[in-house]
Length: 333
Image 1 (cartoon, rainbow, N blue to C red):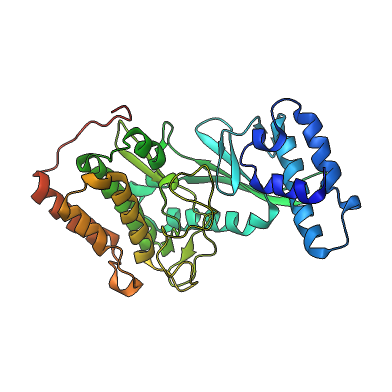
Image 2: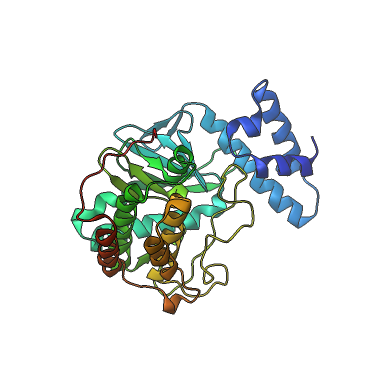
């Protein structure tokens, strides 16, 4: 296998099956290592940098296929594959988050900082709306020498992201069901914004719900930033994510791709986009107008207080549906 082909394969792979195949994974691993090994790389600095990054990625993923001990945690196969990291179930409703590339250590540090800040400054009543940072430590790979920043997060079991919800309701979700998700999403944003943290990537895959108890957890704070600074990066597009394609930035308000200062309105715009997308054509005119008002082009023109916006949303919902009542929800229409 040529180096360029190996780099392309590693870059495109989202799962272990993509990377190593299913028939002879050990053979594929050896082919990749041979093509990407530092001792066999061309002199071109750009190619060498790409190949070394791919080599570290391959060796890390291969080692993670075995039962591995990292710190005090025993790892098997990944339970989930996130935007930047693989997540491993380490028991007690905890997930160990291992970045696939050492170059993303800074984003892992951002998540840890955001969760610590929210935990220290936030209202304890609402802290279950975000993952809890349990542990963090560095790990140096024995084969490559690369160091990765590892975190361990705790959250509620039985969660499902909004992608799953939309797949269960392809014709659009009943606005009365979307209402409690929207309300709780504004609560978690209010919690974060009062702590001075902007999430920066409020996308369907990051909004998790617990259907029976009507819980919401906002995950993946790796792209977060203090209010008034810039969002560090945009979530990579994935072919498997049917609401995005590579290079597609329509989910982001303009200040993110233009590297302008972010604020609470950044998250509010993305949250309203999630809810409009979730309801589809079933959204009544009043809710559609409410969401549009949250997505003004200019950050200064958007609402900037999620708590006040929640009260306004409640007024719209009461006019539409009367006093709030608990409405059982299932992912099986």
